[in-house]
Image 1 (cartoon, rainbow over the protein chains, first blue to last red):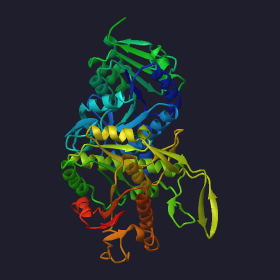
Image 2: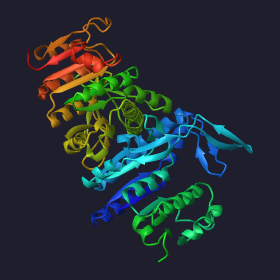
Image 3: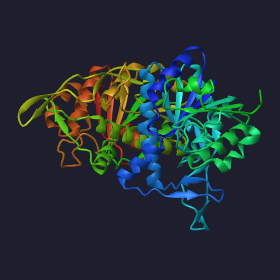
Image 4: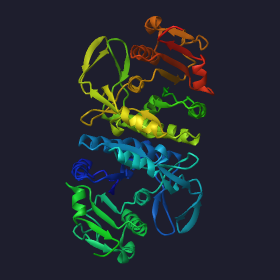
Length: 271
Length: 271
């Protein structure tokens, strides 16, 4: 069993992923899918005139400021548009997919972050009205029920609090928490790069394998969204995930390619 | 067991419905919810500059023309925004709700309508690119699996074809097909009127009970969306549904009120 993370770039090819996944599932494997949709969400915000505000944490991690308008755009783009499109493409290719947001059946439970620190013009500001949360639990019984009955869960944010408040949460944390909860030790993450690039301007500079010892030093090398991916990989490895595969979601057979070393492999134990 | 249909008007009070439903479920009843979202969808279309085009069938039934833009707006408003908001409000009130579109797990299977007839300026036109379908099957096993495990399914359009194409379908047909498939003989439909009005301008003119024999003659009396409701009630009764309750979704205890005759009751058999 593995968790498949599909990035939120529009040039990721969902049909290629579906075809590859179909053959892998036919060999008796099971899988849970978690997907992003940041590009569709940002485009929707643009069309709706919603101001996209980025927060920068003291540790230089960027995140989206989430007010009610941004949260609704997240529901519409992630749960409504992209989740439905992925599930329908999967079903078209013969995968018995079922879409779920973190709200459905209390799948992803989060605690509201009362305050978030953000660096603005060199000053630390306290943001209190940010509708984001930290994941505290996953409804593993629901995922197991669906898996046992032959469904492939396709999961998207948002999450929900114990008291019923819808909250934005970090997608990579969803992946790690689901893997932990189900005792899965393999994560495959597909995005729109060939892997982790030593030089972001050189598409050929893919680092084939990263040892856990070295992973944290790559933090400085990582730029933009890649930085968040490195942090997530560190988190995943610290959460007893043994193998994280980063691969190119734009090519044919993207999962098989990532598994056979076409991208970057991060392993907890050296072979 | 009953099917609860929640209309798509924004002034329907979801919190009132949730509170009432919670007590009804505590008495040991089970329920499947189907909801609309036409007002949110039309508002989203307005904001996104999507042209809303109405088709009029030769039998004077109005429907929305559904091209890919309208279908995406349907996914965003129904599956993304309104479904998530209903599920989160239900969970807030202690109902173990799970949201599903017709695409999820192949819940609502439809056949694409190759052509639709539309009357425009007195002339009959053939519309071929309309992304709508006729429901052919419901995944009853999925609904039963969720019900047996303590979940309350909250269902929205769109549907999906056998070959994986997302399709718009009539929401009332979803209600009837689910009721038929589960052998349910009671439908409660909440909207933003006190019931079926004899005179649409007189809010006090609610018809308390309609016999099946009389139902079809009310077709001429019904205006706008109410016409579709009457057709749906006729369809439901012809599909072996024994009781259809129309009630006001804006008031406290709306389900209990509808069941105790606060709105309009349509019964297959006279008592």
